Image 1 (cartoon, rainbow, N blue to C red):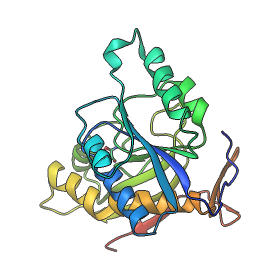
Image 2: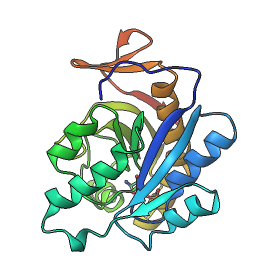
Image 3: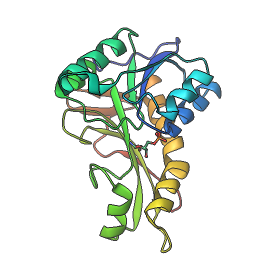
Image 4: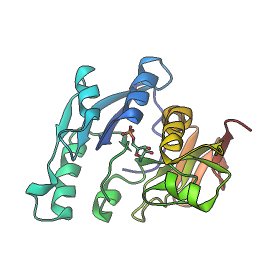
Length: 225
Ligand code: GRF
């Protein structure tokens, strides 16, 4: 895969990876149905056959696959099986949507830079897990989510878009998680995907370009400023 724009009239082919609930997947499916996203989901894949996200996909007639990591000798072997199944769909973009497994660098390099993730924090702050709790512990005034290109380093690739909300005095980790999902993530992922699919944002070796200009800081929307 390479980073050149593949903006065409044909819908972009997506493979979406989920491990759980699938609210981001559902938001992407709605954006496709509404015509906000010129894409088609070729496959939803999971490391967890109980993932509710797989059920959303099945109900919409989208093909699904679950591959159980426990039957593989190691992470590299599992990654290889998952990568092979994804590659068979010839995706334009591989979309991690709550995929709760660390990816090995062979997997990342196989799909880079057409591998995307959404992370529930204002990267580079709060990489890794438990972001909502950590935002409260740090006393951050704002919190949000970021959509980024995946690189072998965890939660570290170039950020396409992020958006933030003010942390309320009465927020706890659960209310923040819910607000970040419903007020930010469900709109942010489709918008960032549309940037790439429509060719507004291009990933080059030296970083991201938006409308032909180097994007040195991510596009940031303040939802309640
Ligand atoms: C989201 O908060 C996403 O940012 C993070 O995992 C969560 C997945 O939620 N990576 P869902 O499965 O999309 O509902």
